[in-house]
Image (cartoon, rainbow, N blue to C red; front, side, top):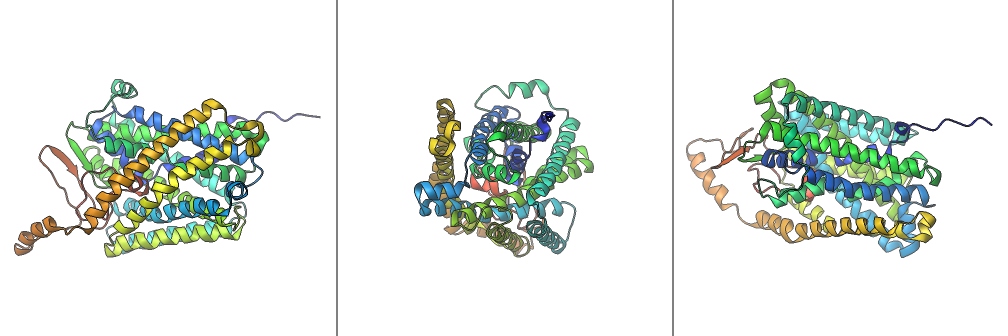
Length: 480
């Protein structure tokens, strides 16, 4: 019998590529650019550390999907009961639905850089949501189409961000030094935690198990799943390093830089390197926003349906309906922000509160399932894997603590406290006919370079960065 030639490595990728797409979104672009603009190349080593822990959990997800005989939440239901299965599924759904508006606004921001009418931008956002919903119901082999689409987006991101970085001619020696651990130059620990949070996205790592099952891999394909997770992690690291290095080469001055939104990076590059830099950067931004936009909603929809026992396959009705609900929720909130200057703060507070519980819970469940010999047989985690995965779990618990004890109280205080200073600053402007909240604004503080080049109602951060927000200065007319 003729034996088939072994598959090349690039034939063994797919799920990891899709996971990379959901991790690289508007928030990760924003956070990595902010760190690069304020710390130069000094924090590149943080990217490597974050991606290593993301890789560990992606491999756990890939193993679970390839080896286990049932879907993840079915396993949870069988081993620990329906309540835990429902808690995991519904928790992930609420996170995805709440932060989905950030992806809608990221898509809108890419269009707003070139289109003046907010109504045209809103129509484009509705159109792209409609395309995403059609994608769920039209294609028979939804996974194959998703994989091809995400490959295209990854290629666009790599090419767009690489071109800008090459044009900027980064300091290669400084880049290499950035991979040596240091405390950085700005001393902004919160931004560094945000960088970890936008790269080490545990829900995306858990969803790897679903993607592996959708691709049709089983225990015989376990090696392919591990190679795929490594390729996806390398792509995450490469894009994040390029983004941070672009900001370091183009924006770092030694003074504090506050970026209002991802388009502010494009605006800043345009002022120095021309319109082409802005166009290329926004092409990468759109690719990042729309790829996250689609996959993030699927993470919430599929995991919630599985947790509720409504199905876990692309052909099942439950996952498609709940993914649609996540898409429409994000679209409605995004349009309210775009057209009505809606304040998203309550939704962000609620999503962060759910994240405090759900993120460590998802990591703990994934670690528990892949350590169980009843589930994994001889492929259960080794002791070294459990040690490194446990360190990652501790990191998630620390970030959850930061969210619970720093981010949430601060957001609640800022939301409920009367904006007396803002009112006092508005009164003189109103008496003199000044326009305080115009379409674009640049603010400068003593000793700082502040790039608040954003339109009214456009939020400062995407969904990943909102999850672990690190901004120390609020954009005056942004829904933070």
